[in-house]
Picture 1: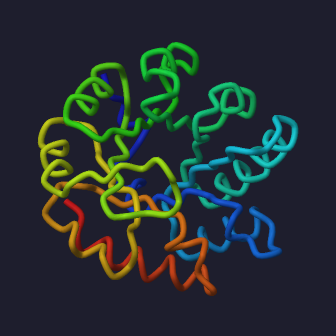
Picture 2: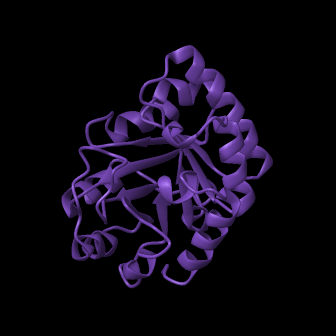
Length: 216
């Protein structure tokens, strides 16, 4: 059963996913700090190309930063890194380790997020122990080459089919966020809408205010 201590759905209001593609000479630590200053409520460290040693070092730094801001911190895909640094949890995709196996590895107290594109995937993820779902791509996105679009009707159906929190992800901007109102989501996950911004704290704060007006 779900533990209230593990995850408060308010933590999922504005979920920031890192992407070093947008650093422009800055460190990941600097830009994550700016997003936290702007009001990001959840951080996912996403590294697809980094070797284990550097990933581990970076994860420890970002974890400490998130602890300072009292914001949940999860690792994308890498259960071993999450275990080693005692991250708050892991987010896995459909092609990664299955949620039940992740739960067995991490134990009962960690947050597990699962990506879903269909009602069937969403229900199965909940049954296997997921704490929240990331559903998308809800708009066209350049951040993930293999992202398939999920209709807003399907997003709504997923929200209705599960009792765990659902966040929308994929191509979300401050301008199109209002379109998601009424779908049942409790928050949004973004990459470039925050980390590609010239003024990250301001972009984050604005996105947070808009998201507050559309969540359930």
